[in-house]
Amino acid sequence: MLAICAALMLAPGANAHGVTVGDLEIIHPHILAPIASAKSAGGFMGISNEGDTADRLIGIEVPSVKHAELHTTEHGADGVARMMHLDAIDIPAGETVLLERGGLHIMLMGLTEPLVEGQMVPGVLIFERAGRVEIEFSVDPSDAADDHADHSAMGH
Image (cartoon, rainbow, N blue to C red; front, side, top):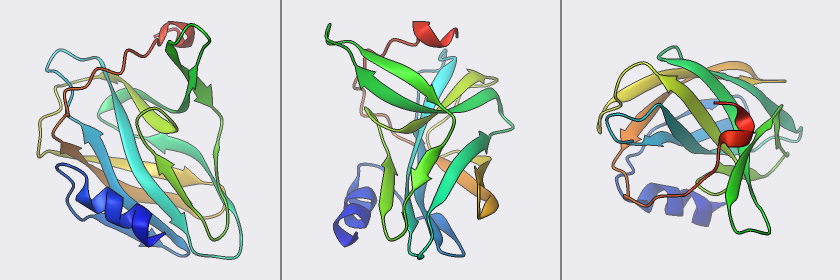
């Protein structure tokens, strides 16, 4: 757990912010700054459950985008990464779940304005047990890596 938190805090552009609600800790919610003309972006964070009862992330609301979804990345036999919609993300008791590039993440679709490095973007995570948790995503510098993900199966 400490190694995961340390890795999140030492990531390029990471700054210490998060939210603790009950047994859940939301660790460094962030968006990597997309290019100015981007219509979508990914949301990332760690979610630590220090309690004895599992919870589930069942939704996300971000007022500044048209639509936000929970996603995972699946790699096909052709080597192409495809994003797949998830109804929920399990947060087991006593564990930390990472939402990161190439794995579980939040997909922000229909950006209504450019996201600028240093900006804070309000959002709400919706958990089955913990309920609605207000957060702020920091817009962090992009590492300029292109993930070559295929969103065609998602219809957006």
